[in-house]
Length: 74
Image (cartoon, helix red, strand yellow):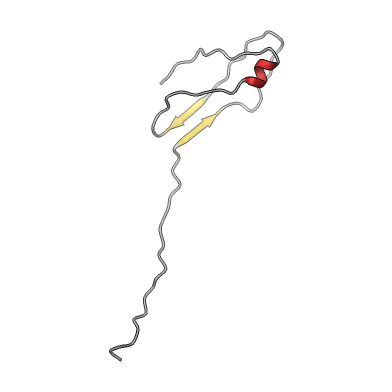
């Protein structure tokens, strides 16, 4: 009748697509001999760009190693 409750579909469905905002790819293993230099190929894809990358190299430094930046920024 006129005063019956209205049946409504209250299930709201939102379509969501995961956005790739940041992607970093580095080699899983880096091997070398003592006092040798190894290049690390770092591939960065960022939707908004990066100000800097900060490496936690405390474990490497405790073993006598070091990281030297020699790459370019693009």
